Amino acid sequence: MIYLKQLTLTETIEELENLIDSGKGDAGRLYHILEFLKNKKPLYVSDQIYLENKLEASFSTEDEEPVSENTLLPKVQKLIDIGNGDPGRLQYIYDMLANNKPLYHSDAIYLDSKLQSLTEESDVVKDKFTTSSTQEHISSPPPKEIPKETIVKVRGSMPKGWTSDDSEESTVISDNIKQEEQKIKQQQKISDAIDDQRSKLTQLISHRKEYEQKVIQEQSSLESQIKDERLKIETQTRLSQEIVTQKEELLKVKKERANVIKKIDSEKLKISKELKQQKQQLVQAQLEQEKIEKQIQNEQILLAEMAKEQKSRLIEQAEIARKIKLKQSDLENTKQDYDEIVSQVNDEKAKFAESEKLKTLIKTQEQDLLKTKEERIHLNDIISNEKELITKKTKEEKERLKSQTLLAIQLKKEKKSFESLKKKHDKIEQQIRTKNQKLKEQQEKLKKQITEKDKKLKSIVTKTTPKKVTKTTPKKVTKTTPKNSSDKKIIKKKK
Image (cartoon, rainbow, N blue to C red; front, side, top):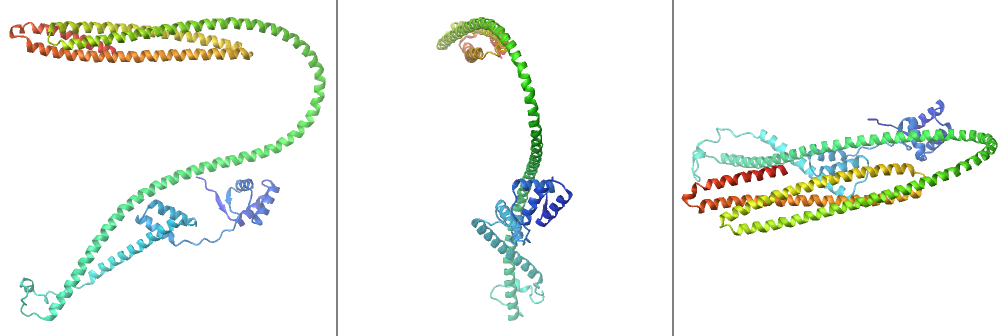
């Protein structure tokens, strides 16, 4: 952490005179700054930065007056330590008073109220200490004067040897006891208040630590900013020195320019001869350019054919999507068949046959889905290969057509059309994916329904069949179980 040393006006004037005597820096500029400081005039920002860099310290243009310490500062600090009031607001008030800045009207009223409460609390604490001291000094009555028999006697009857002096002393002692009990209650209240204040104090300490961390972070950020500004100032000084050197170089360049003009006149004659030769070369270049244009036209025709092929492939993909929709309609038909099977729960043999048919249909549909996936992957491979070929051709065309701006515009248009085709292709692929996912979800739902209904059918079969047919029932169960296992294997493969 780098902190700049603060100099007073007299110290800065002395340092400035030392700089002029030693010959460090621009003497004219330093004299100009010295006159301003002696007359107590405000400096320009550039002069102030220049002087701070030379002195390596900050300074003030006015003489420092003796700062009188504010009497409120220790009281505000005491409020913060005790935890009486909002710690953030009290810290803000403390900072404003420390910097000798005026407070807002609301903050001033808030501070007065808190200081009054502080004085009242201090008075209560004083009373507490006085009561504790009085308790120590109160002398307990002698045991001889108060006999034990008086405690046991009934009200109204006086003991033997009773006198009026003893009764007066007992009344005084009872009054003292009552006063002490009241003081003990007050002390308990004060102790409770102190406990609350201690809890608040711990909270304030935690807040203060967080605030200190924030202050440290801000200091580090300010130091980094100061370093950056110093670097900027150094660059500005370097630039000013470079400008002076550039002015000197300008004079040299002017002299050299006069010599160069003479040389140019002699070279003009040579250039006129070379121009004639270049004209002949230009005629030959135009002929070559015409040949290149013909080649470009042929390549454009090839690109148009490639675009047509891509469109035809996109149409094929659209047909595949339509086929998938048809398959979805078939799946819906299978759902309707399944509902009919549920309605015919009483006919056991027909239900078993229909459930087997549904399973075979699902297997065929899964095979169709796998085929469609393979076709889509094959199409993606073909499209990627075509994209690579097109990118290679476009790169070659770019290298050839750098000099020709009109042809470059045409290529941009073709690229846009190609990108639009790409986007259409991506959209179709996304639609196919979403439809495949929906088909999978529907198939899983159908399988779950089939398994549930198989279980219901088995339970119904066990209930309806008579005792004689018990030997044949386990055979049916054994036939159905492997089918369920095959269904589980298919689901695992899909996952």
